Amino acid sequence: MRRALLLALPLLQAWPAWGQVYRWQDADGRVHYGDRPPTTAAQPLELEALGNGALIDGGLRPGERRWLEQIQRAEREYLRERDRAETRRARTEQQAEQERERQCRRYSELLEQVRTRLRRGYRPQEDARLHDQESRYAAERSRWCQPS
Image 1 (cartoon, one colour):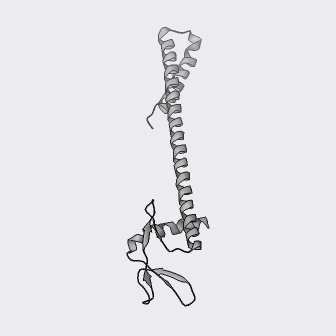
Image 2 (cartoon, rainbow, N blue to C red):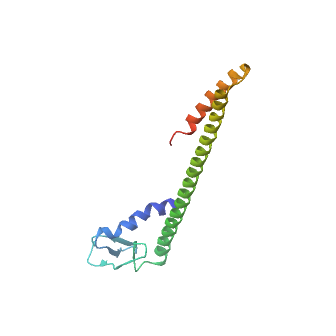
Image 3 (cartoon, one colour):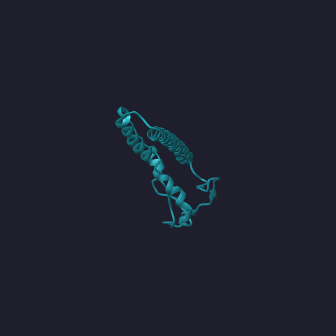
């Protein structure tokens, strides 16, 4: 039902672009709408604008009006959920950027500490460990400090 309402919404919004709209009732009592009257019994409709720009027939029956209100409620709910999702996505992106900056600073500092230690001098048994740390920290810094 919800999907049908969402699919019908663009039709209702595009309605004013069709020009004059006619409403008539057939022999079985069904109401029809169209841009050309099938008989002389069809009468042009006066459409009134709503605040959101959509147009509705001032003479909708209660069931039709409830259907239109359901469509409008579904549209408002969809727009609210879309806004919430966009806010969550932006917040997640911001958090990811902050984490990237934090890791970039961390590995830059660690790399500088190891390089300072290498320049200052070290014991021979520390040689392999310090060079290993230097290459590992340099790789991590390159990974985190790349612009997104």
